[in-house]
Length: 625
Image 1 (tube, one colour):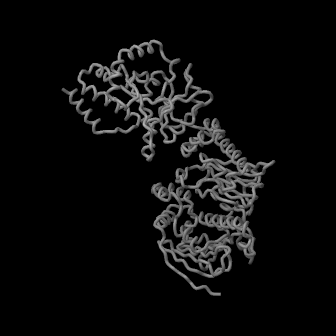
Image 2 (cartoon, one colour):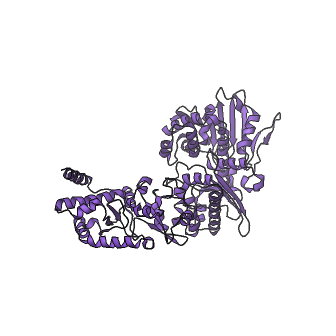
Image 3 (spheres, helix red, strand yellow):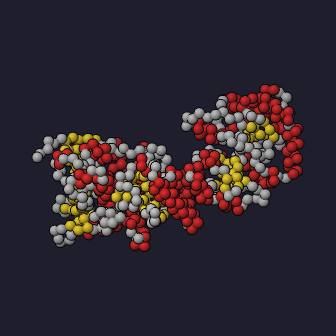
């Protein structure tokens, strides 16, 4: 039977063209990875066929012996990778190869730096294995047919990687995909059987189905890899290099992992897990539409990518596999959501990952510092999300603090407690828009004076974290910008008496300032927080901080009105001047300026910046006379 040819020439998506140029230049120094990527894609296609054939055995078309074939032709200068996996139909070829449908595409391109080494890492994270063929080939021909369709539904895709590709309907008796690379003139090294075997051993020995090549000097094919699932092998038989290459296979990362943990559980439930901590955060870590998770297998049969039910969201950076001996082969995402066996695997998996992080934090501080820099903000979501492991997560958290005055987040809560002053019962912290704003906050003045350490929190997640994390090892966490500070046991009695005296003497002033500011403030009072600044704003213990209000407003959320308290420093010259001010207009201007300054210090936004500038200018003119 002959097929009526339907051939068309189409243009690549603009991002594909940009990506091809980047890959050829950024990855050329490691060009042999093209074979790893094509074999990895072929392995995924076989996994998908196994899964779909669970409910439709006819997809095997009488051939359930899945394998990947690698061959080369010196005369025609081609390398060919063939699989008998699931294959693709015409629309799938267009969707998977002609376009990048991946969420976060814009973020990916914005994150590229122009530094070839760094961009190579980013390209790997983006997962664009097929396009790596163009590193060594000036033309690529892909012929494929989806399992279950007739031979006449074959599709041939071809491109020179220059901006267009052709699609043609062809006869293809065998299901699966064949990729033919027409090598560039300077790529003779890949027209050698020993070289190709070496690459397969190096990168793809862990692939769980046979990768076959024609035997040397024989007209028959032989497997050149172990063809067994790496994770089911005893740990003592797996080298560090094999663990690394398997990580690159499951994660599509080009870098080595930071650490891994491999375990086998037997008993009422039997399962194996192999989890990795990446060295770098993927570009789409904060993409809410992106799917992050673990590859799920049942008795070595691939079931699904990104089984997010196996790992909580705050550990979404973890990569790896889980293989259960007990789950049904027809398990679906819906079933996973209400499956007790999955709940058990998930709970144990979380403990394994937290244990791995604890080991790094204790025994390899340099590696843990790398982990924290890349994933610390994600781990901070943990205490609110995982109550059962809250204490373990809390011990893994790291913060900047006034102890060393740098923006390095390297202070553990246990370190803080070890340095607490005698009589100190709380762990003090401040949240702000930036590290500089936190470090220079007027709220710190009394703590600097008394030598009390304060955690300086400036990540966007910190305010949310502290809203759900209120205690550690019996010590309550206290924002120094909220409510009562609980410093009574640390205060000098003479200072306390002087403060009470000042509050009495300035009673009329604070009342008059409150009348002037009206609903903007809840109350005006004399402060025990300030030693240098004239004023600051304080919200009640359970009110939302000013910086958090600003973030939510910027995101378009409705924020309930919260009137803060204005605290003034009785020793500051501006406050003393205000107390003696007889001119009503100047009194009002000074009062509003003290409020606006305090609001700006908190990272808030002025309702009327022009009025603030005008008042300040008028008063400067007055002072100059």
